[in-house]
Image (cartoon, rainbow, N blue to C red; front, side, top):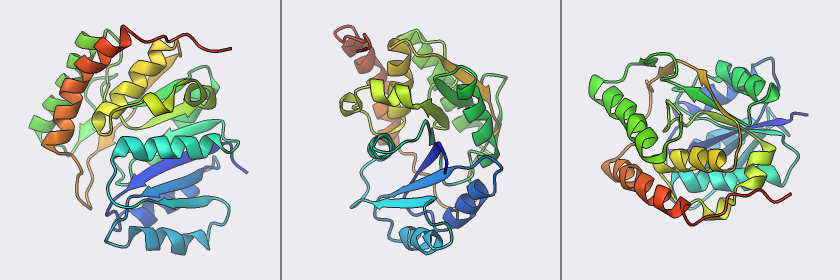
Length: 244
């Protein structure tokens, strides 16, 4: 049995999905994996289901109809995890931009006192490989913008490689998380901090995908840019007191 669940949302990841699953299961620390597939037409879900025979009770898949957004996939996965006995719940991409070897480091950070551990590209310089300079700058300055608006001291505000202790997901009203793209990543960090949780950054090296297609779009970026202001204003009228 494992106390740790890795949630991986997928849409058209047939080039990566088998390799990422096998890599996670090759780690010394035992992890379970939950794939949330949004109706990938390329057969991603079929590959996962074929691997379930090899990893019974460790590999799970939930299929949804059509692209519903990154945020809703993770919320679905969080609720799935909370219905079971997992103590540590992870977000990770399918495309190897997040190194599965770092899962154990994120978990260790939470075991040692963090409530949320972020795999951070920017906490020690800029650790990004294979991104064009324009995208590196956009991402880096987006985090600066988030810090300026929200006043949270997180260097990599849009990071999507994270470990949550169970108590964080039990405390945050997941049905009130509104954003679905990269703004979702910002909103979850901001909300965790507002509830008083200890959010730490663990330095990682982020490597851009070499196979498959990025899901970034102008709409997703616009949601993040405008959403940060909306989120900050909304926070003035919310109660972040934890229920004992």
